[in-house]
Amino acid sequence: MKKVFAILLALTMALSLLTACGGKQETPAQTKQPTALSGAVATNGSTSMEKVIGALSEQFMSDNSGVSVTYDATGSGAGIEAASNGSADIGLSSRALKDEEKSSGLMGTTVALDGIAVIVNPANKVADLTVEQIAQVFTGEITDWSQLGGAAGTISCIGREAGSGTRDGFESITKTKDECKMDQELTSTGAVIEAVAGNPNAIGYASLSALKDTVKAVTVGGVKCSEETVLDGSYAIQRPFVFVTKDGVALSAQAQAFFDFATSAAANDLIRAAGAVPVA
Image 1 (cartoon, rainbow, N blue to C red):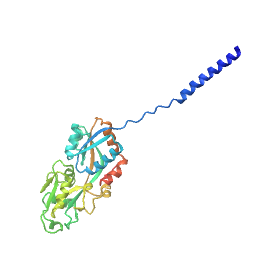
Image 2 (image 1 turned 90 degrees about the vertical axis):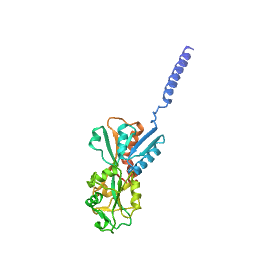
Image 3 (image 1 turned 90 degrees about the horizontal axis):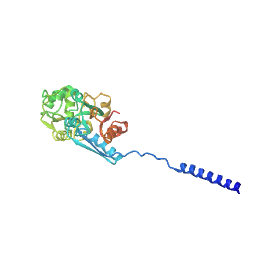
Image 4 (image 1 turned 45 degrees about the vertical axis):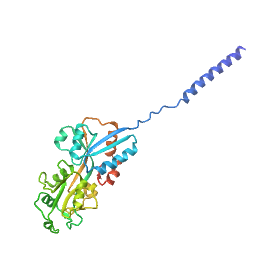
């Protein structure tokens, strides 16, 4: 009996050990799930970047349903100030930051390139202008289309308001800073296009990404304003589209994720479809 009892005891202990081992093996591994992004991302600035920021925001929100990206079209100057004072996560500028803006703690990251097209009414016979001629027109040295090979008519210059990134880029490249004599100064690229479309003698400038078939873009020095000519540098009148942030100030998780997406190669097709030229 003692021998049988000993055998039974040994079997019981063995079964207990097997059960304990089996229990450990059945415990599922705990996998930490990534935290879904949520919250808002506020962008503010350049009206010329409307199509680009719209395309990027739409895709990002589709991929991250808990995030809302807002866009306030106030102009580059206001967007830079919004980034500086913290009222926006990301400022939008259609010009490079100035030295004094950089020294005040702001950083600029180029998201895309944009050609500034020189536009006339579709009825205008003038098809090509040099940068020098464009400067002469906007400073009032050339005042009639007949001086440029077109039909007689007083030239009406239409441009953007002071502080606009498009205006700053145009005047910097044509070397007409503070010298332009314009019949109309408008607060959006769309308004400039509409005004030129409605005036046979008008000339203006607009972002490549905003062009419509209601106006005609003249070639500049024989070069058409296009993605290819902007990227290879052969088109003379071009500027960057810039994300403005504060140096040393961390973005929120959702704002950083949006920034990273917009400046990556994954955004190239969206930027291109919006009419701008990707640089990633």
